Amino acid sequence: MTPRPQKTRNDNNNNDDDDDNNDDDNDVVSHIYLIRHGDRWDYANPSSWIELAKRTKNLVTDPSLSPLGHVQATETSVALLQDITSQTPKKKATTRILSSPYLRVIQTSVPTANALGLPICIEEGLSEAMITPGKLPSPSERFAYFPQIDTDYESILRVKATPGFHCEKTGYPCEAFAGKYVKRMEVMAKLLEEKYHGQTVVCFSHAASIALVAALLRCDLEGMKFAPCGIYHLVRKKGVDKWELVTDGSTNAPHVSENSETTYPWGFRERHFQEGTDNNNARHGSSEGIDLQYFVEDKKNANSCRL
Image (cartoon, rainbow, N blue to C red; front, side, top):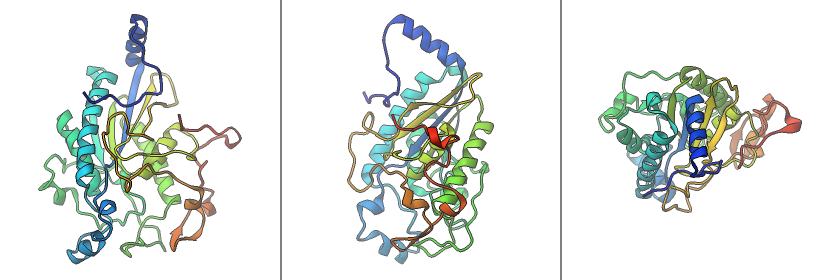
């Protein structure tokens, strides 16, 4: 049996603790699960991907999962199904599965959608950093390959290109990284809180979406990591304004049997926010006061999201 994701609190088997857990469950009004996509095809096949993608007129920034990535996605769906059904009372069943519009993320979400019997809602707000708006296939265009997609769903957040910024791999106008992306996650956090208050939402996204976790917890980005198919689980209880971190997605060890060296745990660094260039890549953030502690309300007493 695939083990459940690692918890931040100790699990005990005595009856008193079981009663306490039931009381806690009854008080929980909101659950947010955030999962990163699995192992990438392009990272596993760097010598051929870009050339073949361009030759076939496909977007080089929209690769599929590797064979390993598909295995990881299936393993993750087993862990999620077990965790969701144990953490969430039956009367508060999962309401939505949201997925970034990128192919590798949709593929990662499919096994979970099948396991839970829920459609996949393509949410632009969960898109990859440096997204090139308008260049990805639409949900309707994806539907023939992924009939789990709800083509009637409308994204709660639309992303715009930042004037003067272009994707290094495609040359198309893109959203500035990392500043504009981090601010997008700030908005996305508020929208998720409002729209899915008292419900459970399972979000599939990218490594940089650890910024969404930091936005919800109002904590420091420094040292945070997101493993391939890692699972972050946050809860907010009745009468409590703050979110609690239950499961840490910095590792996938509890539920993924194998990883590659090419798709690895990723996290933000200060250089991602420094203006100018980094390895010929334009960066953004410091001019607008955006840095690793952007979400921290009291920077002198910054909290860490690490366990």
